[in-house]
Image 1 (cartoon, one colour):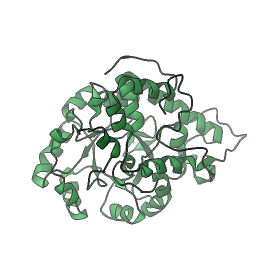
Image 2: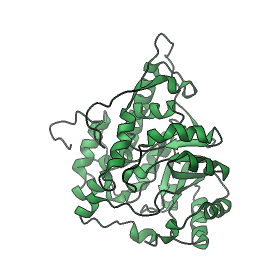
Image 3: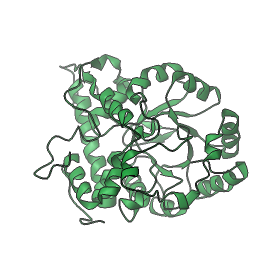
Length: 364
């Protein structure tokens, strides 16, 4: 339930606190929870926290350019608003609010096929922005084709296939809350088609789509090589935020070997625990072209819809440019692994561990 439709958030700490107050405990646990022991979720953050910067000084960093080109589209930041289902639980406008903010700001938005709003509804709110559609497989190719046609007609320029969700993760927080997934009535629950997906079937989907294609959920160098051999345009490194497979690796631990396997033949995007501009810069240093924002996106929408999401993007822009200047890099192509070193993380790592000063009403 939205309580403050147009808040002014000076930093993400305030966004997180407001989001917690605006949603029920059940929705909060749905946003923040993960599979089983939530080890994969914590490893995402641990992998990021295990890297520290090696800043270079006495360089002219009076002008810093953080604008990338993603799949041929010029964007304002190396960010992607990752696909999320059930966003209407966080705000009445759900994915529409997120896409509208992305379009206004200049970053891509990926619409989940299990979002409550249709491609046409989202396109109406974001007519000129770079829009990407994400597909879960709940039928054969004849079931898939009209959905791809609908996304194309609405102006979506690239297709994401999520490939790390053959089974729905066993999520203790949802079980304890008796949480019923609202996405079941949007696409149906016949997951056998998702579980039966193969490289050959994916190629059939890719051929019919005919445009740029992204595989989300790549976690090994072996699958990254197969992806580029099949002509995939973006290898999206992800473990679904730890929500499917428990005891997986952190995505930043996967990134270097996947970048090496791709060898420049496709763009590499990544998500998994990224909540600050410094996190984004670390991924760029290790070869990622863009970083997906998921939970931070959900918190922002819950905190205040489009206005809060836009403020989050402004905050991230400031953090990214600030970080690049402080480590001595004036553009994205100047970033590299020489700016990073491995360290022992400070304190516990979890989905909220980057928010140390959240006021008198702590949520962690």
